[in-house]
Image (cartoon, rainbow, N blue to C red; front, side):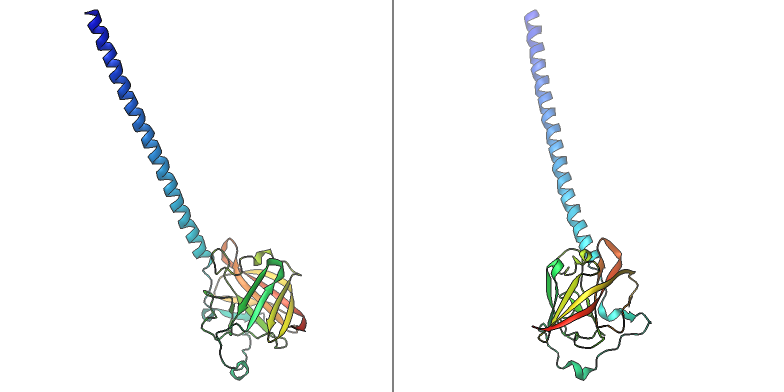
Length: 224
């Protein structure tokens, strides 16, 4: 009887060890599945967050829906149609900002490709660089993605230079004012009307509620 009882105890121990082993495996498997699920969910959520940030950072304005104001509240004077010539879908000039290694072409403001989703955009009502005391206004996205051409503008300070190449000449500007405004559908541009200026506009980095305006004044013009 003692032998039989001992054998039964050993068999019960073996069964218990098997049960414990199976339970352990099940627990480990569940943990692995949970961890895997967590990382999959985390990656999914992160991808959605990136997409959401990209969307919000690139929620800018449509040029035709925004009123560009000068500091006295009047719309900037537009160039006459006969002065602009024929519409072209080729770049008519280039914006270069050495400090942030930016060089990007811009189009005729009437071109269908002159839009915020495809290029840096010359805002309607702008003057081209060869108009004395005029104001060339260029806008572009910041944030992430290929179209965030102005993402590094936040690195600029007053005194930094920007250049416009246009009709065989290089126009060099110096930034004299940087300020923010709420996105209200209206952009007020504060500049010296006795100066020829370049104004750059983009969303403020990490602040979807405001936009940043950079005003630069012409310093020199040279032949290229």
